[in-house]
Length: 293
Image (cartoon, rainbow, N blue to C red; front, top):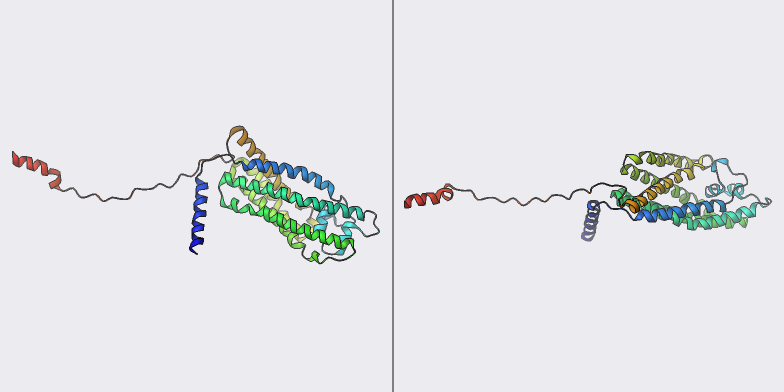
């Protein structure tokens, strides 16, 4: 218990030291910008890898990959890939597997992008909320990896004409991934509002689409198409922050949050009691001199 208290005190002192340090450009913006470019380029390629059409899933899903992620039975899988008599079934299955294999790398890119961006915001604003929120994209990436493992098992069983028990576990990681990414977007919007008035409008554009995430998770056949937009809004906002923060650091050597650190607490000197000055000590020399005279 004493060790835990000591560790808590050290952590408190470390946070206090970070809060009092002088403003400086956050080098993490460079890493966030690099990861953001990788997310953009690899995301475009990945979107072209997944199958473009399905075999009759609900229009509200928007894309076959979302319909696959929210599949709850064999009928949903048939709506995505088609029956054996469908000549496009094999091509859809191959494209879906290739897309999910690429997603295993893509999740590393977006986790690094979001984690570095939120870390850079923390370096700028020194908020403990931002420091704790670094775990959100990392947890989302773990849920995404778990989801991909389940999708591989489900697709393998479907190819053999069997039902995979993994389908019963799929809603957990699929829903948790989008919830965590939505929370990360809210944290990004919070950081924008703390940076100053010029970021208020972008913060609202990042925050507003997250309202659709609960709707999409409750009724994916109707609102699943809103999930990419809801998540992508935060990524676009963070990319703008990373580009601006990198430019200010490189061209001007200044941080985004350009404010003076909080002054350290003043230490008052201990109170010393002064000995009372008596009339004898003040005028004693004069009296002695008078007596001498």
